[in-house]
Image: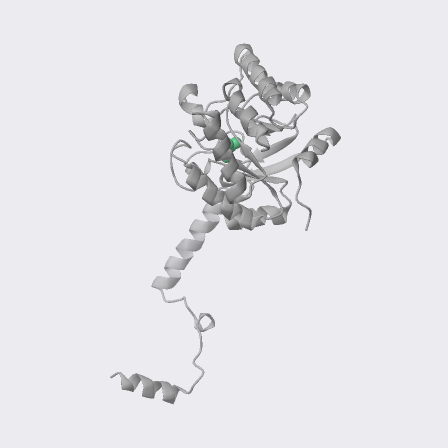
Length: 283
Ligand code: KIV
């Protein structure tokens, strides 16, 4: 079993050009498979709202939801660097609330870091959480919690003016104390520029190759989330198809009494005669 990585390992991996592979996970089995597969780190994303709970977006997700799923993931992946995602309104309202909620991810769910969305507008929170001794991952570009302001789940930084704002945000969150930055759904040219400009590791979800590693949402890459698939997703499996087919076969087997067979039952240990006597007692 490999040793749990720390933020220093991720810094070294950036310096040595070794890419980081991370996914989201929300439950015990997925986390344990990820750890067995050698995934470098796990994000317990507030995307759980869509992938696990069937909401349209991440807005309804609560601190209690996030803490509970972080606990499940930690039990499944005790030796993997895990990041708790701060849900909508758990850090926007004040620096005090941001620090208190960030702390809960460490105290109650044994997370190694937290992630929050936004650039310059959340720098006070990043500074305060970092000052409390907590590792903070930034997240800019397509930030799902503010998709309303963006007019939907849309790629960002496609034009010079918006790319300039992204670069300013990236520089600001590093300055505020972030120890890594996730860029989502931005062009690879902008990703590359930000990655070269920043000393901290820069990771992509839908932001191309030229950076320090890649993140995918487990439901997307496993083919389990059918509501929509973003352009940037590569599907490594089609679990929805496998699962639905298995359920269909089960229904068919139950209806036709092909299941259970003799292999699937527990056999009596006393004689049939003794059991018949027992049944008679109740007749
Ligand atoms: O919640 C999440 O999974 C995320 C990704 C979209 C990056 O924040």
